[in-house]
Every structure is written in C-alpha cells, then in structure tokens.
Image 1 (cartoon, protein in one colour):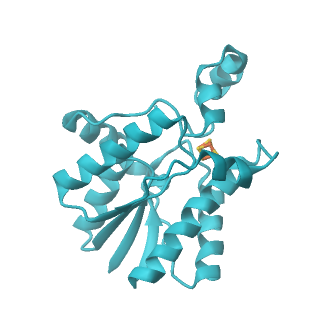
Image 2: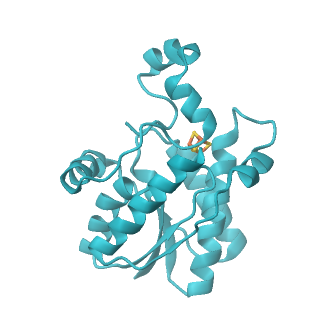
Image 3: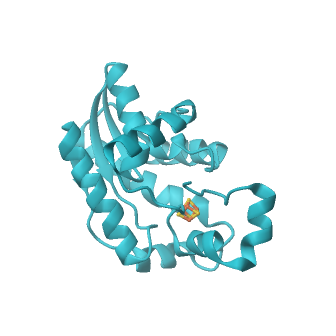
Length: 192
Ligand code: SF4
C-alpha cells in the first residue's frame, strides 16, 4: 500500500517508518506542524526531520512555514480543548496532500505517543477522512514507543521535551503546573 505518513517529529517517525516499511508499505512523509512553538524549537524539529529523512531515504513534503498565528486563530479561546483542533489542523492537511498525491491512505506518527489522546485522534482522523475522501488508517504504534526512543538516541536525533504548542511548553516548565504534572506524571502530550 502507498501510505502518506504525517510526522510530528523525527524521533516519533523512526519506529513508525521502520514498522510500516517492514509491513511492506511504500511510505511518503509529510511534516506539517503549525503547533510547534516557539520559532527556534520549530526550526530545530524541522531540521532534524529533514536530516533524518535524508539518512533513511524517505521522500517527504516539509512545510517550512511557522504556524503560530494560524494555530492561535484556529484554537481561539478554547485553550483546554486545543488538542482536538490541533489534531484536525494537521490531519486535514495530511488528508488533502494524500488526495493530491493519489496514495491509498494516510496515517500519523502522533499515535506512537502514550501521552496523546488516542480515542480523539482516531475520531478526528476518521472525520477528516470522510470530509476529504481518503482513507485514514489508525495504527496503534505505542508498543514501539520505547524503540523509537532507543533509535533516536542511537542516531543522535534531537528529542524535544514537550509536546509542541506554547501552552504545552508552559505546562512542562512552569511551577504552576508542577502539582498536576506530579499527579499525572506527564503532561497531556509530553514527549519525554
Ligand atoms: S498539547 Fe500537543 S497535541 Fe495538544 S494542542 Fe498542544 S501541541 Fe497540539
């Protein structure tokens, strides 16, 4: 099957790509993440992804536009409900590219993270799939999460310490959120 793999970052892509290729799929990559802030962090993740793609022979579309303004407009005032909007922004764009490229289906590396909301992610994927008319495949890549960390370390890839948006960065570092971090061990979609 020809698959478009939306990637949130290089470290999460490692295991997902390994798994999809070993299952016999032809994979095309897509980096589109208007949720990554601030700019220096965005560039760092993007550059790491580009270098990684070159090292493993992965053809990919890489969106270089920094999406803070677009992200803020889309999320609006619903800061607590932002993850649904964030998933939709990224998966909708991936679905449109999948249609344009004529691939069989699209999926995302987001589903490797134990810190993402998988039920919501699958639902949003199905919604945009219906809307655009390209199949979405929800892979539960979570069993490979540890492996992705190992591969990233072996390759010396930059691994980010928070999910991406400026709010998740605050939740990661601000003492204000320390108690809830201890309670849940990690933030909603922390990368560590
Ligand atoms: S916490 Fe992560 S998934 Fe949720 S809105 Fe922020 S970047 Fe997106």
